[in-house]
Length: 306
Image (cartoon, rainbow, N blue to C red; front, top):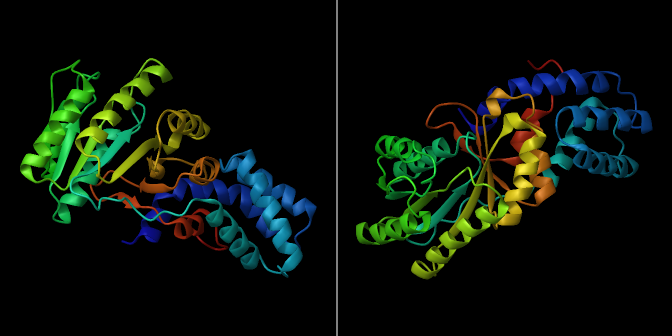
């Protein structure tokens, strides 16, 4: 099953919610006027695109309608797809060109961070890459145990210390082991529960310094994992983490369990950070590289579509 089909299947709840709000607007379409634009803006806010994103989309649609003759519902949908896809940051995929490349994974507890790391590891292992997992979430007792299970499932190596150990020390040892074993990629798990932003900054800065010192020429990615079901709370989390770390991408999990799929557009457009992956199920292959256009087309209802 390809990205569009999986996303369409995973977005059933979202599409139903969007259809309920946008469907009536589309059904009543006669022409693009202020009444229609106001209703579309309200419908997009209900779909959790956020007020700022919805307002910008409507402004662009208004300008486009002045220059083009939008006369059918399908033309309206196409224009809206173009606009929403264009508002999201373009993604060129993860840069893992150096050996070893480093992927730092951050996010609060409960968002599916460990599962995301396991699925990434399995994906790269399936491509013939040798993967090292660094169990640098030493604050949560079960974190390293869960990561070890995923390492075995994915066929990846892992370095772990005891509970309460220095996360930067785990990263240091992971890098040394990865070099010795000829690993292609190091994926670093980090603590999801730190007391405040200062702690988060300090911990990430320590890890960053170790990586910069030990692997000065490595490819680097910093991925923030967010739970789609939290809606606008995910936007707030993304803003805080983006201030604390130089995010290169977003991973949005649990997209199949939410009516708030529009949050993908709001986060990418608002932060200027691309969505790299979306989780659309529990399977090991259900973490999929993100495609902007296919996502928006699956998000917006088509007349007669179930």
